[in-house]
Image (cartoon, rainbow over all chains, first blue to last red; front, side):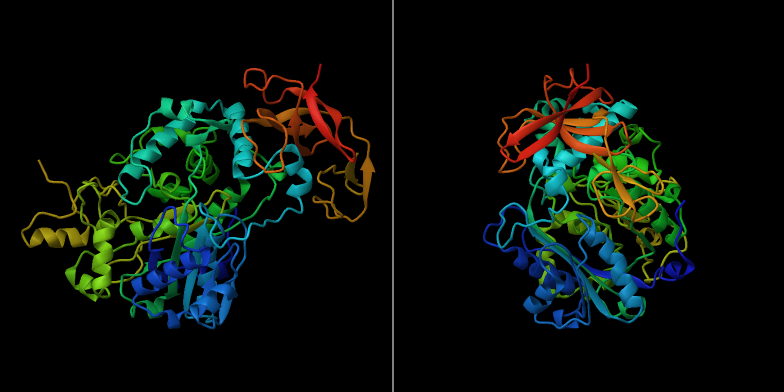
Length: 459
Length: 111
């Protein structure tokens, strides 16, 4: 069991996420360069935090554009930069890096930014590190994530007897989640047969097993806990994070069917946060391929080896049903934003009107209308398309395909970290207690005599 | 030929200048048997690189070599179907000349 040092535990709750947003648009955007996607996301997220771009003095990014490029384009001269690229999870591990930098005073306002013109390739220089794969993989026709994840998936099927139908079920459920999200590209329901009959790309994957590629940007703003009170919204404290790398080439993995990097990163994050994998009732996994979430659940110790799909089939995969649900909207919605995309939906937002007034200006109201579904989530009101959506959630775990996990907890309405995880899911009622009205804000609403806006009607 | 650590005996692939197990710099080469098992596979129905010239479907293979390490290759002389190909099936190397100056170690089912 991997643990972290006492000194890393001291980083618990010292910094928080205070702003989150996306590029102005998401989808196929041939007229928006990759750099512009970064800049749109950063400026929107900084505004979300109630800050100015000039306040940013730490820039964290990965991939093609260096933090220096972003700084130059933004017109700021950051005190601290980090551009470490370790794959798709780079942006998640940057949250931990930003917390460390903030804690030590190396910067005061950190922005983690991601922008990717993945679909249109506008302003993208195609280049990749081919030192090893160019010699040992490409000559045999490998190339791209599909050919590597497929290897892992075939081996998993061999070792545990998982089937193509089970993977297809993940895609079916993912699409159900997409139907709830106005920004998703596809909303029409699909069936297991649709997945199995879609165009074969590389056995065991058909087209509908594989993530979409999208043009999009996303950014997260962090600051130290003592400064968070100056920001527009209730902060989200970063309680734990962990990272690990194991391989670049899948031949070098200890085991194909269990990700050692995922396991180690999870254990480190849990160790820092002082929780175990059992404490979670809300998990968000990056679903680049349909086999990814089940294998990550197994690697994290949330499901027994080989039983990730069964774990999901018991309910978590479907909207409206169950506690430890997965937030599987990455695949039908978009690929490049990765987890950054998911943050806004899950931040704790007190429903009190006073807070809403403190949100900056008319722009936010416009956004709220445009992004009606998402903002309904943020404010804890049920939306017409999401009748059972609740307001606040418990601790959330983000896990990336390559294995790094970052964990964070909610704050209370007063902005203090909670002593113990609260058991709210995206779907509403607190699960462990089995009561609908346990949230303090919820009770306040009731005491004023009106129906609780966040709970389904009784009777 | 496979690289082998002269100190701890660890056989590894791809080649590098130190042993990934004991970190010794004393690395030698050993003759490999050319035998192994099919650790995992995919059946590609499209090219994944612009330079790829072989017509799909073709079989992407991860081979577990008898000596220990794994390597990527292709499985040839086999019907590209999950019915005909199973994980852990025995395979053997076929050195295949693909151009004037490139010969690749491909694998086929062992008889």
